[in-house]
Length: 290
Image 1 (cartoon, rainbow, N blue to C red):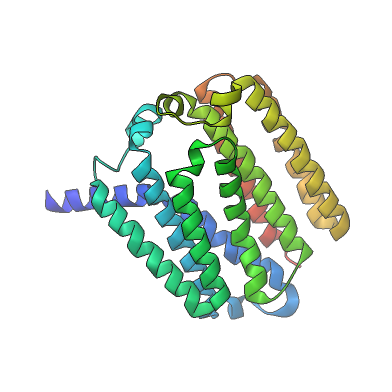
Image 2: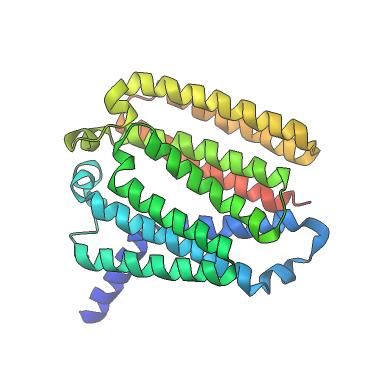
């Protein structure tokens, strides 16, 4: 019984940390570095770069800590929005979760400082923003969505500091990450509108209504595509441009589904759709590395 209970708690701990998302974060930074390095170095040199591994691990640890604190503050809301997925308060008491959050943040910041003072400062700022987001910003209209999108893009822009390379291609991927995550975060607010409204949240769909929020997402989608096109024109990489043109097909389908969506399950599907588009963008880093 004790073994099965330990296995159950281990599985729940992985769920609490959103292990699938952590794997995506970890691989994104490695794939982006591989893409950025191009012909400058072989893949095995990146694998042997222990400082880069430390930096990527610190990012992943801080992200996990961010999920811990997010669930810590959202117990009551999650009992309405997704009762079957609630872990804090059921499998783990709140105090140990907060303690784990503090320990993980400390480790993440110290690992960043070991790599460089700048990475340490970025990690510290990310920790503060993730706490502020979970405690206050996510219940405010738009700003919480914006912060999450910025932090996602920052996981890529951090590579510019580490490699001392202000690559336009890396900036393009950061814009891609920012845009698609901003869209996904607003869709998640629409998906969770019932629980959020019950506890005083002021997300866009609560203030403006689902229909108006959908229109805003449409506008952001158009702006996102236009900005991505401008970057691709500037880069002038035929393979990469072709890949994103092909990616525009599922993105168009996503827009079509968004226009028709009116139920919680529709927005849940759209949120998952965004994840697949993100994964497709990550894959291109490996397929078309320079």
